[in-house]
Each structure stands twice: as C-alpha cells, then as structure tokens.
Amino acid sequence: MRSLARQHWEQHCNNLSPTQVEEGKQMLHTYYQNFIASEVAIHQPLAVEGKIQASLQVANLEFAIAGRYDRLDYLGDGLELIDYKSTKEVKPPSEDEIDLQIGLYYLALEQRYRQSLRKLSLIYLRTGEKISFDASSNHKQRLEDVIGELAWQLRTDCEWKPQPGEQCVSEA
View 1 (cartoon, helix red, strand yellow):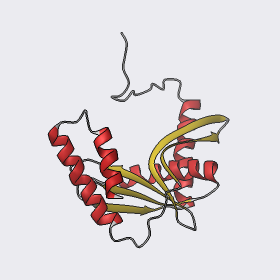
View 2 (cartoon, one colour; view 1 turned 90 degrees about the vertical axis):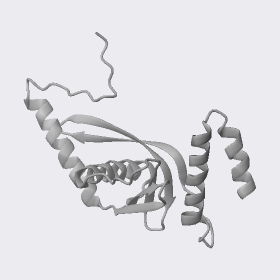
View 3 (cartoon, rainbow, N blue to C red; view 1 turned 90 degrees about the horizontal axis):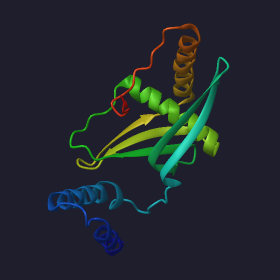
View 4 (tube, one colour; view 1 turned 135 degrees about the vertical axis):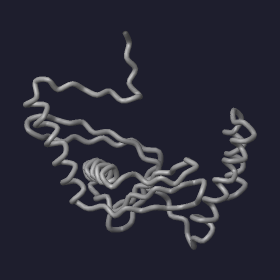
C-alpha cells in the first residue's frame, strides 16, 4: 500500500515547492499513523470528493443547496461526512456555523442517499486531530427555520440588499 501511495504522490507533486512536498509528506505520515496504521481492516468510503445538491421549499420559495465533501462513510445507522483540513491551526467552527453546516449536509445527504447524517468529522492533517460532531434531525429543523426566516425577509423587505462576500467580484 505504501508503494502505491508513493507512486501516486510522485505523479502529482511536480508543481510543488520542496517545502510543500515535505509538508505534504509529513501530513500523509501523520494521517497514516493516526487513522490507518491502527485499523484492523480499512473500510472503503461510500464516496470521495463528491458534490451534493438538495432543494428546500419554504414560503413558496425554492432554495437550491449545494455543497462538497472530501469523504463519506457508511456507519451502519447512517452516514459520516469527513472534511479534511490542511490549515496549520486547529480552529473548529463556531457552534452556529457547525449547526447550519450539519443541517445543510443532513438535508442534502437525506435527499441524495436516503440516509441520515449521523456525524460530521473534521480531520486536521497537520496535527492529526479529529473533531467530530453528532448530527440529528434537529440540525435539519434549525436549518429550515433559518431559511424560513430568510424567505420571510425576502418577501417582506422592499429594501433588502445582498451583502456579497469576498469571493464575489464586482465588475464596475
């Protein structure tokens, strides 16, 4: 297995600086030691590097929801979504952020796979830390409440102005 990993690594690291190559090797080593080496059997993920889409109807408005994930595992009683983080600092999202993120994934995975999200895990590759959050239908309900409030604001606020994020480019 290590020779296969080494072969793939060498094929895909041509455009990286020596520092990036060394950091990448260290992250892979840490991941292997913390999450692979101790396993009796390696379970095949349900999906990797996937996209999910869902829709939600609130107050006669349809909201399209889309997201991406790194890995999706079947747990037996539901799904675990794993998001790999390569940041240098372990910084979990705020409670509000994680609740909405879990709600979005819960809704989308339920529509796509007919399975409920049971756990959202963040794996920090540089430190080898894994932070997991339990998921329930309450997260989906909270998401529906937040989107319902947004729908109400869209319907009633004549002066509603979007607040574009940094990723939006304005062409003037």
